Length: 111
Image (tube, rainbow, N blue to C red; front, side, top):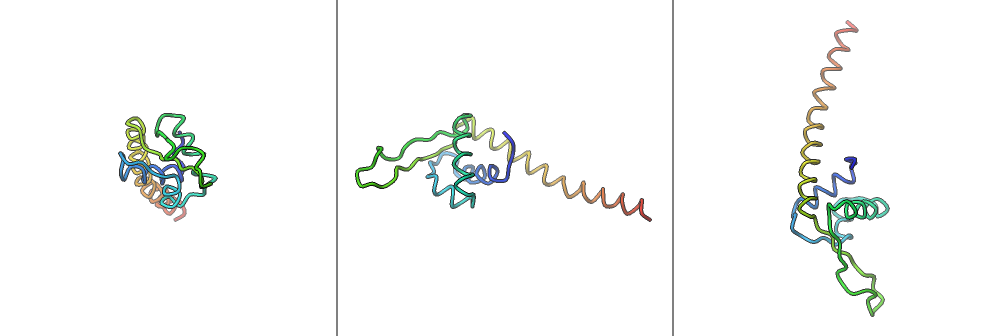
């Protein structure tokens, strides 16, 4: 799975409490992602075994309220999330050094 910004934000939130169950709306608020990004991402993660999802209430609710899903990391998903977040962290830390070296070389060439 490609490490996009929405995915990384979602994994960071889920990793805060790996054993917790999260409502989709709570994840929506905490990640700042748009619904059109978050829910397809949650579906993909569920399909690939990174998270589980279950309905919090029976469907349909008698009073007309929408049903709510709860999402939680699987053991596999927790492991994958840790690896992806660590790789992204290492990559983003090396990026400024790379730019610094490139700019330094450019400065040497232009002088």
